[in-house]
Length: 538
Image (cartoon, rainbow, N blue to C red; front, side, top):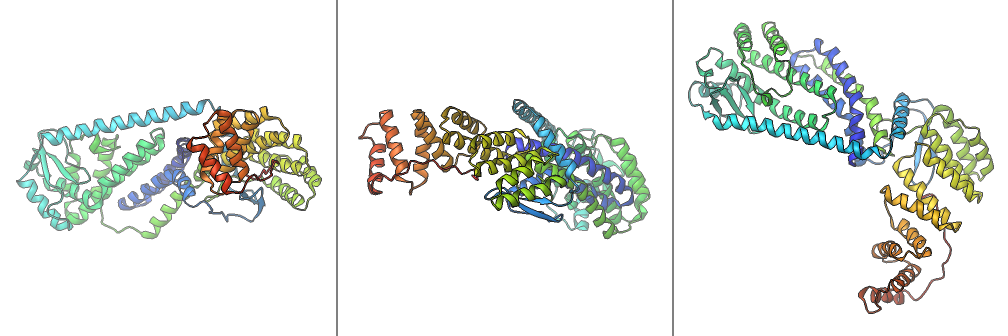
C-alpha cells in the first residue's frame, strides 16, 4: 500500500465512522456498561474497516466475492472480472468513488499527501508534549509506602494481580489518581492517603489494569493520530473512553458489594482535575462524572446478555461495510474484497457478456456493433467498453482504431492503476508497429513518470524503441535490466546491447564487453528475429 492508497482509504473511514457512531449511539442505552465497551470497540473496528480491508486485499490477492449471481468476463490473461447480474447494494457508493477519483487533478495529489504528513507530524508533536507532562509528574513523584501501598496490596490480592504490579507513587499536585505506561504505575496526589475515598480510588485504578484499559487507550491514541482528519473517529474514541470508565466502576462495585454504592458515588463526585494525557480523549469530564455518579447509584450487578452483545457488535460492523467497499475502490485494488470493488451497471453487464462471447467466437464486427449500442453509466462502464472495443479492433488489424480506443479507455476515469499501465504499454507497442517512434516514446515516458512496473518484457520493448531512435543511453538502461535478470535471454538481445556498447564507446577490453561477447559465443551466434510482436494482454 502506497501513501496515497493509505490517504484515500483513510478518507473512506469518515462515512464508516459516522455509520458506526450513529449505530452505537442508538444501541448503547440498551446495554450494560461492560457491553458498552465492546460496543464502542466494535465501532472503532468498523471505522477502521476500510484500511483493514485494503491491507487484507494485499494479503489475499485472489479472494473473490459471492454476493450475487454473476458471470465471469475475461478481459485478458489474468484479468478476470466478476459482473453481477443484479445491481449490487453498494453500486452508488462505488460510482461516487469513481467519479471522485477521476475529478481530482494529478497536480493536487502531492499537496494532499503533504497535508496529511503535516497533520501526522503535528499529532506526533502533541504526543511528545503530553508524554513530557507525564514525565514531569513522574520525576517529581516519590514511592508511597504507607496507607496507599497497603490498600493496593489488599486489592491486588482480591483481583488476582501480582503484588509487584503497579507500584503507587505520589506527587504534590492537584490531580486524580491515574494509571500510566505499559508497565503500569499508579500516580496519585500526596493528599489521597488522608482522604476517605482512598480505597475506592486505588481499587478503581487497579481494576483498570486488570481490564487492560490503559493498553486499549494507547491503541486508540495511536489510531487517532493516523486518522487525525476524521472528527467522527475521535468522537468514537471519546465514547469508548467514557465506556471504559463506566465499566470499570461497575466491576469495582461488584467487587466491593452493592452496599458501597453511595460511598463510591461520592468518591467519583469529588474527583480532582486530571492531566490531558491521563484523561485520553475525554473532553466532557463534567458530563462523564455525572454519568458515572448516576451509574454507581443505580448499579445492580446484573450480568450482561451475550446474545444482545453479539447482535449489537454485528450491527456496528455491518455499518462499516459500504465504506469498506468504497475503500477498495479508492485504493485502486483490482481484486474483489468482501464486496465487488469494480462492477458494471446491470444493463451494461448483459451487453458486455454478449460482446465478450462474440469476441471469443471470432465475430469481431458483431462485438463492435454490440459495443456501439452500449450506453455506459459509470466511468468503469466506459473503461470496459473501450477496452473491449480496442481488442476487437486489434484483431481486425485496425491499429489506428485500436489506438483511439485505448486512449479513450485511459481517459474514461474508470481504469485502475494496473489497467492504466497495461493500456499505456499497449500504445507504446502499437506505435512501434506503425513506425511512429516519437509517439511511442511519449507514451513510454508517461509509463515511467507514472511509476508503473518495468518488467523485463516492458524493458525489452523500451530498449528496442530507444535503440531505433538512437537514444543509446536509455536503450542501454533497459537492455542491461533484461540481460541481468534473464540468464536465458535471446542472443538478439545480447547483440543489441553489444551494439549499444559500441555506439557509446564502451571499450572492447572492458568487463562488460567481454562478458557480453562470451555469452553471445556460448549461445551459438545470432538468431534471426526482426519482427516486433504486439501483445496487448500484458
